[in-house]
Amino acid sequence: MFIQTEGTPNPATLKFLPGRVVMASGTADFPDAGSASRSPLAEALFAIDGVSGVFFGSDFVTVTKAGDQDWAVIKPTVLGAIMAHFSAGRPILHEGVTAAAAADAGEDDEIVTQIKELLDTRVRPAVAQDGGDIVFHAFEDGVVYLHMQGSCSGCPSSTATLKSGIENMLRHYIPEVVEVRAVL
Image (cartoon, rainbow, N blue to C red; front, side):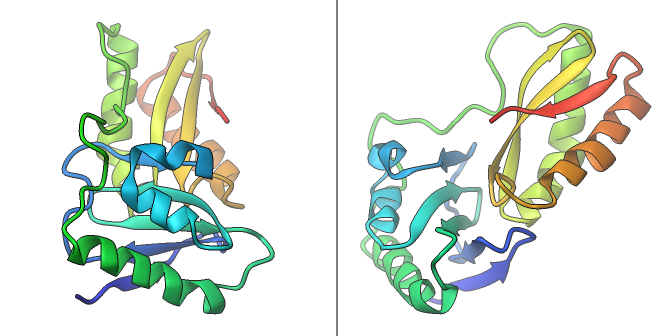
């Protein structure tokens, strides 16, 4: 098995591409070791000294390192853990656990539907290229609340992405949108 790696705009994260499907649908975000109990792979990665975050996308695993760690030291161990997991044929999520929904279930009004459609078609593919995801949280009083995940969470350029990119695009297509804010 050959696993490719790619840098991301966030220097604390690397994107690992195992050459196979990671998540058949949805994404899974593990912002800390306490959240990893629903995934054997996330548990194995958090067992590595210096791993501070894990994110699964359709065909990639994004790993975030603690600020004081060096990729040259932990990258081989991360590669080994990912390779061992896929070689053993273990599941990504424990049985009965489902991927995070990209949006809430239920009826949305027309504006929220338009926002979600633009995020799904124009924004999510771009942030997935960088090893992350963006999840719609709410739309209230003209403000769109979004949650950044994976390499996008804590990325130095995420504020610029939200304000200059996403906010401008949403305001262009949906006049009711006046601002975009990140939800932590």
